[in-house]
Image 1 (cartoon, helix red, strand yellow):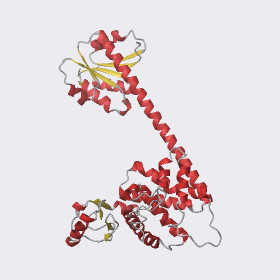
Image 2 (cartoon, rainbow, N blue to C red):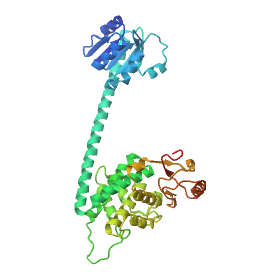
Image 3 (tube, rainbow, N blue to C red):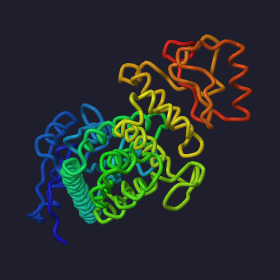
Image 4 (cartoon, rainbow, N blue to C red):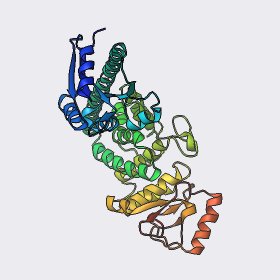
Length: 398
């Protein structure tokens, strides 16, 4: 098999000349030499060899130090290092600690040298191919993400043309969804689909293209057949690669907490958390848009009236806290989440303290006392506060 690549031999000039003579017949193999650690590292950075073969003992250091320096240099990523070791007793731990790839025991026979160089160059080619594949995959993923972003922007604009205000509602829903995702500590990898769902759920209204008959009474936006448009949106978006997860979140957004929703009568934990978040945001904006709530607090009050039936109580409580407090970036940075067991007297709440059933125990700004701590812990035993408590940074132990 032909040896092809670049090899750097570092060490005693006589040894390097001997090894060079063994490898010289392989014309596709470029051979470089250096005599010490400094010149070896300089040559490696200039020529970026595939393989460095270095003696363990160098005049100004060691082959292990050279190997470590090469492995720590980002410009030499993938360069393999073989150390010539005078003793067959070199422990395996040294190789791992020094980050070299292999040892050769001196004296090195011609056949052993050729075989080891061949195997290292083959390994280097495999590494280069894997790295190239990884970079290509990253490029393709970026291209797919960019196309999906462009498609999303186009769909949002098209929906807004047919359903005026949809783009603004979607943008605000996406903003609130991001803040709710922070409260629930939803992993970043799952947040993009929620953002897409918040921006595109009204596409179902375009699909249905239903018009209210003139003279009909204004429909209660929290009841009626409003749920049908999310099913239409789900069925449409499922047909597009990359939008299927968001489509499923939209399709489950009109399931009720108590199991009376549509289309599948799912209840409580059967409904994805992100769909429960989306439902509250959809109805929050629908109430404001239809004029059934004059202000955000009124819309929140109407949502709270159905907490535990239509809506996840904790989602309603968190949304209420976010909207009423403004939930701006500086405020978010000034608070910390503390487990129930870590609460201390003197801490100041940065958010309303609610149980998992949505019962508000204390309002934001309240300072914990020994009495309130006892009440919180007692209530926690029967109605858990599962996501901890948000307190202001600077409070004791926060």
